[in-house]
Image (cartoon, rainbow, N blue to C red):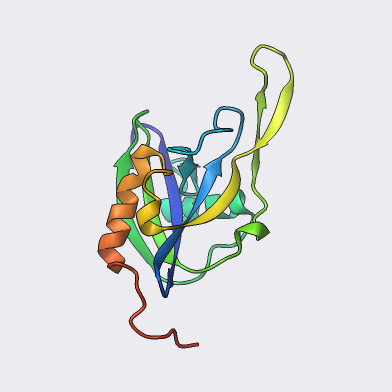
Length: 164
């Protein structure tokens, strides 16, 4: 396996009005103030010793501070990003309150050249987007996953009330 690899888990829920997907806004100074193309599927890099599914589960937990919901995973395949990284994503149906998320953090020198290390959230907020409205905010290289999810679940409208 050559090149960096990343794995993620796209959470979706089906409502009376259609399907929603949970996206995270990328944290840190480069993304503050940006909205279009500044949102991501919770994901992260993994090495050859880790299975991609395990990495997707771990990264979801690290980036949201929440355990991913149980349920069947829908493989959405791979996408090669502009920087050369290959991202593999699965979708799982579930619901959670984004306000409960406790994002993981990273440390970087900011401002650059200052010698000051600061901590930033990897993803600084999480929002449910209607599937059709999630394309513009999502980083370009991940948009294909929305299209693939749509093909798997149709328009995401409930045909009958959910059974509990």
